[in-house]
Length: 247
Image 1 (tube, rainbow, N blue to C red):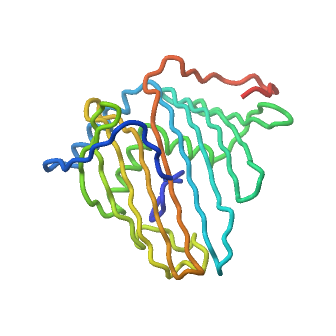
Image 2: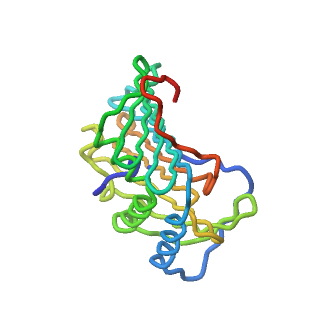
């Protein structure tokens, strides 16, 4: 994920419920924080990951409708994933996709023919990137590629969190993925990682980035990743019935 913004790395502002209070923390060792986070998430029996990435650009004064992608990933330790994906490329049509990975077995749901066994390296990679090891790898890469601004604290719904804030500049963006009119633009953004102070499990990642060449060529992109339902016994992932059409 060299010099790329996470989603799938794909990484939309979060609408927070409750009262948030930011405060500056005393010096915190980032490596120790991530080490504790790594131990905590690797011990989780299950969790859910919700991602949303959006972008909208104005090119030569023509504003597009924007692109968006949503992923919902259920994980059950040690190697079970169930993924639903919705992509909108600026039209009125949402493209839906769903798959399950259990160890070495891969299943995909075809809306017409139902569940079938198959294989797809990209979809397997998406699952791997959201395994406990993959999430920790994401946090390590962010630390390497973004400029860390601060490690502070926030309280949300009565729970205290570490908040690691990064500044995003041109050096952290995959320039070639941008429209040609924006490749020389000014790029500014922030990325935050929230980690629970009590159990060291991640709550979310969020980023907001703006691109500006001039009033005729500009844009924004945003990404949210939310982690929830840790150790929820109701989360079950079983091999689907082949040819069945129920997700």
